Every structure is written in C-alpha cells, then in structure tokens.
Amino acid sequence: MTEDGWQESNGGSGTTPEEAEEQHPLHRHPLPQILFYLTIFTIPYYQLRHISPDVPFLKVDWLLVTALAAIIVPNIFGLRRTPESLRSNLWPWLGLFLVVNVIASLLSSYPGYSFFNVFNPLLVGYIFIALNMIMISRRGYEMYLPQVLVWSIGINAFLGTLGYFANYTPFGGERGRGLTIGANNMAFLSIFTVPLLTHWIFHAKTRVRSVVAVSLLIINILGVVSSESRGGFIGLSVVALLLLYEHRRRFHPKYLGVAISLIGAVLLAFISFIPQDYFQRQATIGSIGEAGAGKSIQRREAYLLVAWDAFTERPVLGNGTLAFPKIWIESEQKRRFDMEERPAHNTYAEVLVGTGVLGFFFFIMLLWVTFANFSRAKRLFTSAGEEKLASLTSAYQLCFIAVGIYFLFKSGLDHKLFLLSVPLSQVALTLAGTHNETTEENEAL
Image (cartoon, rainbow, N blue to C red):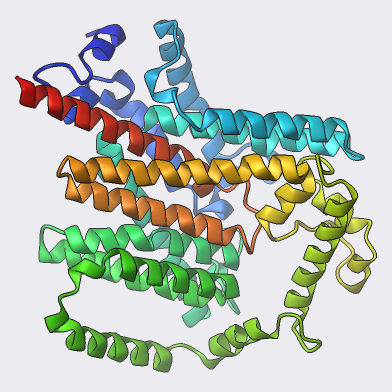
C-alpha cells in the first residue's frame, strides 16, 4: 500500500486504530523504529554519548539521528506534502518563539553567541520535536516509549544509587549521578519516569510485572535520594502529591488505614536507611535568603538578581538567546563566586533575560498548549472508554509537569525530555482523535 493509500484508509471503514497505525511505513519497518528508540535510550547516558573527546560533535545520539534522517527525509519528499503527523497547534507558538529569538539575537550585544544558540539548541531542538511527531506510533506511545524510558532511566538510577550508597566513584561518590551530566540531572530523570511506573503498577497484567514496576520505582526514588538534589526533593514531593490526587479514586476507604500504615512503615525504613547527610542538605532549603545560606544557594540567589537586572534593562526583547552566561561573567556578583560563565539555573529566567516579556509569553503559551493537549487527549480517551490510554496520557502529562518543575532549578531548554514531552502531547491528541473517529465509523457500520 502506498503512503497515499494509508492516508486515505487511516480511520477508514472496517479498520481499528491499531491496524491504521501499522500501515504507516515508518511505523511498520523495524529499522527506523530501532534507530529512534535507541536515540531515546541514550538520553540518560551523557558520559557515554561522546565517541571521541577530540571531536565534540561526534556523538552516538547524533549518529543515530543522522542515520534516521537518511530514512525519513526521502520518505517525506516521496509524499510531496507535509506529513499529517507534523500538523500541530504547537507550531505557531514554536514559530513565534523562534522569531522573537532571532530578533533578540540581532539586537543583542552578543550576536555571534546568541545566533549560535538559535541554531543549537533552538533549531536543532525543533528538528528533534518534528522527529518525535513523525516516529511515535500508537504502539510506540502505548508500549515502546514508556518501556524504553523506564528501563534506560531505571538502569542509570541504579548506577547512581550504587555510586552513592556503595561509594563506587565512577557513578557518583559524594552525590550520585550515574552516567548523566550531573546529580541534579539524574534526579530529574528519575522523577520523570515515576508517573509512568505508577501507571505500570496499576495496569500490570501479572504479579511479576507489578513487582518489576515496584522495584524500578524504588530504584528511581533512591536515585533521587542519591543525588542529594534539593530541587529533586521538591520535584519528587510535588509529583508524589499529584499522583496521589490523580489516583485518589483507586484507594477504597475500607483500606485507607492499612495504606497509611504501609506508607508509614516504608517511610520509616527509608529514613533509617538514608544517610544523615541527605536530610542535612535538604534542611538548607529553608535557608534561602538568609545570611548563613550555603554557597550553592547564595550563587543561585545571585543568578536571579543578575537576571532581574538584565531583564529590567531590556524588558521587551531581551538580550539575545541564552545570553545569561555572558551577562553573568560581566556582572559584579560573579566576583563572589567562580570567575566563569554560568547559566541561570532557571529556564524561565534564561528565557526572560534572553527574549524579554515577548519571548517569555510565547514560551509560556507553548507550555500551556502542551499541557492542554494532554488534557484534551485524556478526555477523548476517557469518552471512548479507553481507560488505560487515558491513564497513560495522564502519566505523560505528569512527566511534563516534572519538566516544568525542573525548569525552576536548572537551565533546560535543550533537555531531550522537554523536547520529547512537547511533541508527545500532539501525538496523544492525534491518537485520541483518530481513535474516536475510527470507533464512531465502525459503530456506524
């Protein structure tokens, strides 16, 4: 069947959503799917992605994407039109955000630096977003993607836990980091898959699968603990509360007392198992703004002060794409700390400084539309009686919320889990809409 034939039969009479999906050539053939999910699998393994330190741009994930592009591009040109999977309500906001970044970089005091950032991570990130929209099928959305994410991140969390609790320094030491770029990043990765693992636990078809999911969940929580990340502690707490609210109907009042007792016993075990250093570090969260705050917190306060001053100087269009490190190195605040360029450790501050209120507005609208897409997809799946897919979509939405929390503590405009979550919302919405249309047509027959 030709690609045109698939477009005509997708959602046509007598076909299920699963059958329609499998007729897509890029979803049907194993090679592009393997290359795509290998790329996703490499996300936690920053330390292993570089093939040679002498050639910094030669990375495993870049080679995988290049090979995948060699398959996708001829396929798209063969269509002679834009693939249906690329149509999205996200592109207007992505486009407007790009335009503001280009204008801000033209007017920047650091044009060369800013335009490099427009290319990478911005344009390169947009390519990754498009790649995800094209490659994630219904089966990928429902099975391949969550499995690849929970296992790749779970293995890394285990390595970070090993590094922290067993003092195996290749994977940590004072703070567990696994094979990621750092401890804070490992905490975020571990939190990201907690909603997916919770979904797996509630929808496991066998006891063995449920035990595996619970084991991976414990490993991920220990991964957050091993990082000693204060942002990770806050993020995990928020996500845990949102998960309790999301699954509140699953808890029968009859078993509430037993559940509370079990949770208390687990918390007691964790508290007795976790080193005292962890709790001492988390206690410093309350020292923000105090004179006795640690150097790390003082530095983050200084970042925000410099960011605010830079924003007030150029509030409308900002100082150029991701220009904060250049502004920081020229500031008086940096004299109190290491004399080097540093990011703002806050994505929202980076965007506000780089593109002003205009770019910040488009960025927030992008986040809002992404969140709204997940919400709408969840409602469509629920109305179609697809409770499992609705639950999975809710889990993906909570993963996206974890990204938003991470943005409060780190600069992550180029983080692949952000660039995955945004298009995933459109994939969810497309699948939910296609499923409803196909179901209605089949019922009419």
